[in-house]
Length: 382
Ligand SMILES: NC(=O)c1ccc[n+]([C@@H]2O[C@H](COP(=O)([O-])OP(=O)(O)OC[C@H]3O[C@@H](n4cnc5c(N)ncnc54)[C@H](O)[C@@H]3O)[C@@H](O)[C@H]2O)c1
Image (tube, rainbow, N blue to C red; front, side, top):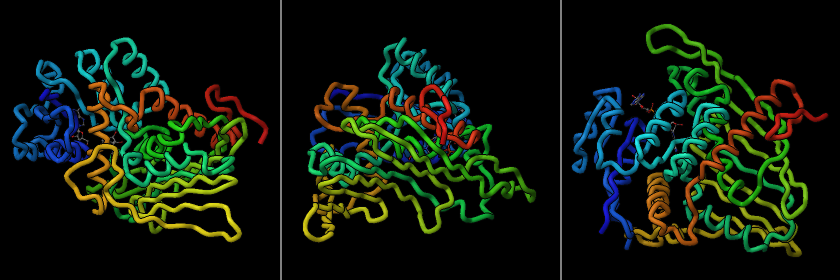
């Protein structure tokens, strides 16, 4: 069986998550390609030390150029702060490697456009991380929408809600500082996750009115003092999309201060004939509504069956974050091999750029307190 060698640049939270998924690749049933994590780069020696426990890793380095010079590395997953995306992604592509980029795919729209342009120029296989669509519940939402069962779609809501920032004593980190995270703040952190499914269904926001909030403006600096926390904490984007020739409101929420929410990703789609909704808050539950004499929702308890790439895990067992992350990696590797078939694929550079257009327009909307046309940043009368 063919083996694809993987390198990771940025071995922190998400680097370790990827290592854990590659480490149990054998759990994928009849998967056509073996993926093996062989090389890891991180500036921090303590972070690198963890990877000594990963038996397939043969290269540990603090210099990403050394990893990129390794001819045996085929694909590089880059999981570093957003201010480094542009430089590192371009270097990966120029080294002749394929790239699994982390979101938001550059710190801003300009960076995202430059990364996409380099991907086009080099012809390398590039996708952007976004794992939630690979949950069976989300797959069912997508097929329900495509089935036409919902009738005329009249409203869409999607969001990603965190609450760890509700702890006001949590020390500052790079994700809460504009110079590392980007001016788009929480939208850059969570927005690609929220937009992936709508964009794939062809629901491209045309207008946006954004309500952005800076709720916590300083945090402990971890050294006994305080540091400015200057990113947008919460964002509610009221957007307009065209679905089957009709104008439809689509609300997109990304929040770091959402009381009561740990890591809640959700989507709800309502039509004249029915509705469908799914939330990771209740991972097994798919909710479907069909127009009848009474207003009645039906709950289906979903199991593991329904993942795009079957594994050894029994069909009735529950799915979790590590599983959908592994499914996303499987989709990346399968698509790179031309073996994706009809299955859902990872977010494309085009989709990542589209998400940045929405975020850039949202910033403009918040600044001008007006409705902004996405793409050309034109303001419209509210
Ligand atoms: N897909 C998801 O669900 C998800 C979740 C969290 C974060 N992310 C994204 O993943 C990326 C990384 O986030 P994280 O939470 O893993 O951050 P993290 O801070 O835990 O890890 C980042 C790592 O990058 C290393 N690093 C920094 N500069 C480097 C350089 N020049 N060369 C090599 N290593 C370097 C740091 O030492 C650190 O270990 C971001 O783009 C973030 O938005 C994605």
